[in-house]
Image (cartoon, rainbow, N blue to C red; front, side, top):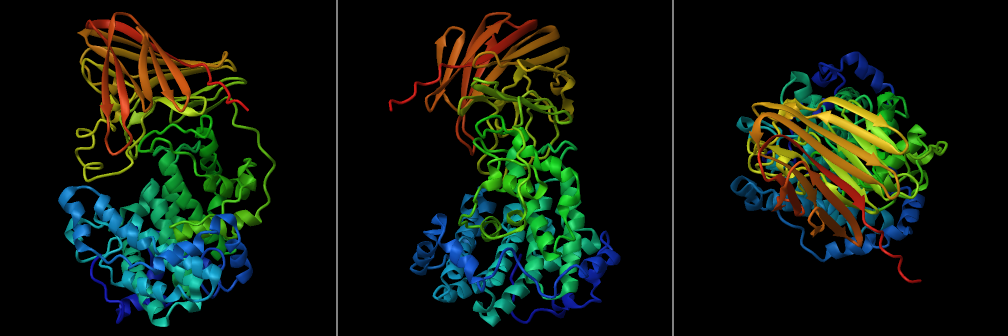
Length: 634
C-alpha cells in the first residue's frame, strides 16, 4: 500500500494471540506490567475511527454534504467495471526496470476500490454494494502480498519466507480493518474470518515477532516518518479489529512506546529534518495514531501529553513563508502546502487557536478510508473547544538548531523567503547547505527546486548522489567552487552561523567552507539580507577565498519562465507574477544554463560563472518583486 497466503485453516500460533498467556504479552521493550495497565483502559469490544453504519444519523448527514454528492455515483460506476486482477508481471516490473510506476499502479488500482464502495454503502444502507465489497476483500486475502517490492523491509534473503510489513502493508491493513468495522454485519462471516486471519499473518504476527526478538523491522526504532506511518497502520488496525482486550493492549502499549522514537526525530523546537512534505506524511500519521489510542482508552493513553508535540504541531505555521508556500527542502515536492487536516486537529486538541483551521469543515471523500473517516466523522478534535485565537506567526520564524530561517513580508510587502544552513546528513538528505527559497506575491519564484514526485530503484541506492542532479548541490541555489560540489555527510556543515533580526531587516550569515572538499579553500561565506522596505528584497552574497586561483559560480534555480532582460538582470515570470534578479560580481561573468527534469517538474539552473579563475571574489544576487499585475477591470 509476502508470500502465498491460505485464508482459511490458519495456524494455531496465529490464533493463539488472543490468549492472555500468549508470548506477545512479554514483548521486550514494553513490558508485561505496562500491557496490563493498558488492558484496564480498553473496552471489551474493538472499534475503529468514527461510527459504523448503524449510526444512521451520522452517515445520512454525511451523505448530504456537498463534497459527498458524488460518493454514491462513484461507487455505482465501479459496479459496472471488473475489479482489476492481480498481475504478477506488473509486480515484477519494478525488479526489471527499476521504475515504480507499473508496480505502484497495480497496488493502487486494486486498493482504491475499497473506500468509495464502503463509503457509499454506509451512506445508502441498501446492501447493493455489499456483494462486490465481499468479493474484493476475498481477493485481497488471495493477493500474494500487500507490500510492494520497493518498500519491502524484510532482508532480501528472507523474502519468500516472511511477510514484510512496511508503509503500504501497514496502511492497507488499517484501511481493511476500518472497512470491516464500518460495515460490521454486512460483511459475510466467512469473508471476515479470512480477512482477520490475513491481517494476523501478514501484519500482526510479523510485528509481534520483531518486537519480541528485536530484529526484522527497523522502523520500530526509526527516528523518521516510517515509524509513525507503520505504527499508525498496525496499531490502528489492531485496535479496530482484534477481538480480545489482551491482544489489543499489546499493540496499544507498543504503539505508544515505539512512537517516541519517531517523535525524537524532530528537533526540540519542532523542526522536521525530513522537510515539509514528510511532515505532512509522518506527523499526519502520528496524529491518527494518537486518535486511535485516545479513542480506544477514552483519553487515558494520550500521545499529546508529551509537551514536545506542541512544538512539532507548530512546525506547520512556523515553516510557512506566505500564501501557504513552504520551502521544499529535502524530498519535499515543489508546491507542497502544510496539510490543513494536521493544523485543525492539533489546533483544536492543543488549543493553539490557529484560524481559520479551527472552524474549517474538512469532511471529504478519499481513496484512503482511514483519512476519510478521520476528517469526516466525529473525533476528539470535533469534541474539543477551539482555543483563544492566536496571533499570526509574525515577521519571522527561526529554527536555531536546524539553522533554518523563514522571513515574511511586512505591511505592504510582497516578498517572503526562507534560507538554511544545517548539514548534509539528514533523513531524505539533499546536499543543500546554504539553500534558500524566494516567494513573490502568490508564487514561489526562485530557490530550492524540491524533491522528486516519483522514486525509482536508484533514488535511495548508491547512485542517489551520482545519477541525479536534484539531490546534490548542483541542482540547488549553491556555489560550485573549482568545479567541486558540496560533500555528503555530517561534516559538510555550516559553521559560524550568525543572525541579526530587526523589524525592517533580517541578516543571516554562515561559513560554508566545510561543505566543500576543495584543497586550499579558506572561506566560503554566504550572507543573506532580507529587507522589508517597500515591496521587499533579498540579497544573497557569496564571498570566497582560496590559496590559489580557481573557478567559481553560483546558481539561481527556478521552475518559472525566465528572460535576461538586461546585461545584469534576469526576470522570472509565472501566473502574472514577476521576480527580478539583479547580479553584481567582483569580475566579469557569464550565464550558463541547464534545464533539469528528473521525476519532477523541470527546473532551470542559471549559473553566474566568473570568467576568470580567482583566488578570491564575490557574487551577489538581489531579488525584488516586479510591479504587481494590474487588477482586472470590474
